Image 1 (cartoon, each protein chain N blue to C red):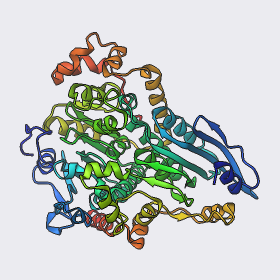
Image 2: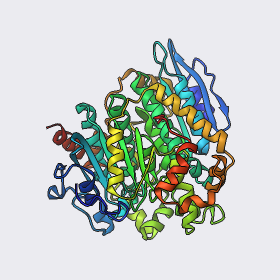
Image 3: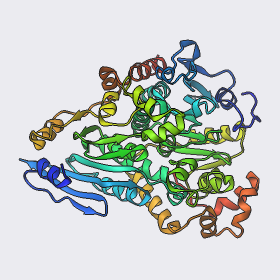
Image 4: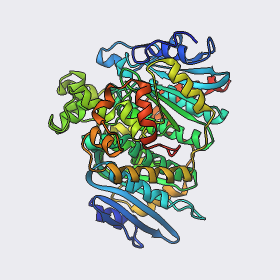
Length: 238
Length: 300
């Protein structure tokens, strides 16, 4: 699905989402009274210091409303931008600032729903899609922490062997299904059904605690994370 | 306290912790005796470690009870795997409930690639737990001066802390030197040029641009004194704090946005001899840097 198709499907009552470079800003009406604010990154763009700052500024500008509206974060990105300039400026702070802004919005009563409709990787994935209270994806989305060729170089294993190993475990290889099994993706939407209805159903469910550890355990992709975190929590609280 | 003079860079995670906190006050949660190792490294025929490269527990600092975590950069580069990350997530969730501050001794290359998806998600869970603890009023203090630096998702976690203490040896960045060189070529980044690496992401540069709050000696005395002071000065994460950070980071790009080298930034800060800064000892550096650097003013 193209971005235009997705926006039309999510917002049958209309939207004002505009591009600013590879960033997306606007609002969309799902129908009835439900209006959501939209921010996003498109075109498989790399996320550098300037765009991370602009996105965070937009999110912070949405805070403080009397009745906080949901924020939809559309994501089709590459990784963080890899350059000497970005690191010289402190890219870690800019990405952290964006993640904190989204998480603070959630703390202040906004639903923050990510929709991964293309790629995302590494630090850009952490600062955008993974910083939402709920992460949705469309089939064909292709998140990755690192691509297999790079992983082959670091682990000194042939790609063919890594591909073989990836069949036995979802824990390291790229891809939507692997990340879903670890609990990163709450739900993959059905593109043949009404997108607005599916988004509305997600918004009607209250966002609670971080439940991704439990999802990863239930789906088999992260056997230990939830129980280890709970045991440490209990030991510290005893 | 023991071995306060030991080099932070050279020390192991356990030595750092022992030297940092009040003598004999450390109590570990799920230590090596619990044998909670990675369930994934066996697939790669790699050795496992019974604490998965991170030590978490409770200790006292100048009499104050805090939760502490220390990464071991000598095991898998201190990287975040499933168990490693979950130990820190659990500690931070407890901190919020207990209203206790957390001290994190970073020493990490980022995500552990052999369990990349679990590591990436662990970093996201840690960031969420830090924000939740900080909005509830807990301080989360990061100490950076280890052998592996603070790279990848570790750098982003550091950027979510309320206060950062760095030594000259500390490095904070998202993309590591080798990763940038591999992706963009040696003209963009020569990872073997150590001096260039340090003036792009090293402790002095981070302190000068306000990316870290304190610059200390490479030993436990310096880190301990700065940590105790930071624990006394904590305040919660609010919208006001993030708006101040927005302003701070905007100002940084406006002031240094064209810079391509640490020297350009330091010159713009008004340093008369930028090329002399890397060679200066801590006190001499601080004498010059204190008044001219961009401060972070708790805007993080």
